[in-house]
Image (cartoon, rainbow, N blue to C red; front, side, top):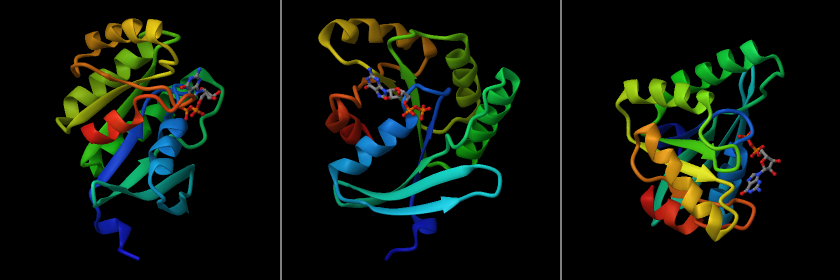
Length: 164
Ligand code: GDP
């Protein structure tokens, strides 16, 4: 197997419960990928090699375990983003349409803006056409039009792969 450390890396970031792990799994299921799970010292970290248009890429779900205390969540999400900013070639920034744009999403957006790496904004939980209109709200985060996806119904995943 190809050494995954040498592959371009895509990191998935976002606040808890937006569907980062779901996006990870959806991207994996489209093509059969080799899952190389790796556990960090402080938190779990899941990596896999995905093939997009014949190119192998390392996909990293940096979410890991997030505690329930608000302050702790902030610290851990920030840590996750800093790590992604360091190692990613592309960052997938996941939000979700049902809660709308949250102050937490805005904080993540500010951090991502600073790093200058390519960011693909993804709005998850766009389970139907009506919700698709609501997804335009996320334009305000400053990363252009978002890829509207529903991991639940596997909508928009092909377009997201195209974008990647
Ligand atoms: P993470 O904490 O950001 O990794 O989020 P998860 O992938 O664990 O998902 C959080 C919750 O959102 C779970 O209850 C999922 O079942 C739910 N979820 C994920 N994708 C979708 C979706 O496309 N539509 C809806 N309605 N729920 C979803």
